[in-house]
Length: 296
Image (cartoon, rainbow, N blue to C red; front, side):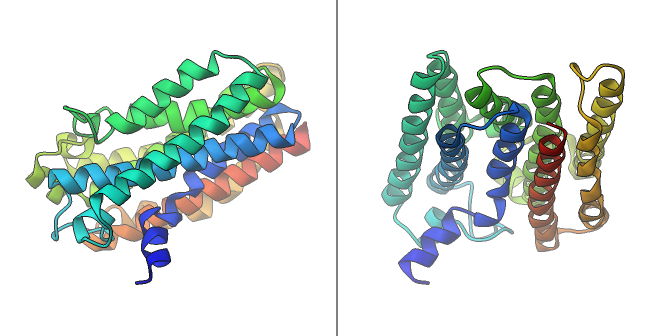
């Protein structure tokens, strides 16, 4: 692999829809768009995710969590495709880029974004770093829901409109659930190797069968949330979602195959569940954003 290909592989491009989709939804939910602020929000989201991917690659590589028995695509550190220091430097560079873009947004809106952003960066680092990474404490799903789902969606809406509408809050929930489903698909695949390495993710703690049920439940609940939001919106548009938000339901066919495969699949056969959920999250987000934009 060329150097460029190695690093492109390391950022895990197939999963980046998880950072793009909440920003797109947040922009539409805001009701108004400030182009440079939207661009900065996108930089924050994508840079934080790439930084998280590379930081996880580095920490799991040096800790010995990632080994040759890992079932997913090879990681840069563990495989030797890139020196650990280079992976660490790249992760820190991405976090710095997110910090600069976030600071610009804070200066334009409210300085409260500074401590919020600092907490998000700390959560990113402690996922697999620090003395006791919380990726192995069974709470990573909650953290991903809060930071990559709710904060990314509602935060993008705020930096554009300087307020967070009910529609933005409602929209942040299904986005968070789908992004957690991406994490769960990854962790279900890695149950055997994580368990052997002592990394007790939620999937390891509750067992593979229950983790698969949780994965399916997350997908279903994302769609149920949109329907509930639209029903509330019928009674009062100011506290719910517009009916056009139901356009997101058109993405359901993309959910069927991952939900079917996640049941019997083992090992590498679970990889399409991860990539399929990433695609679903992006398409769901685009359709939800389109519905919010039409209604707005």
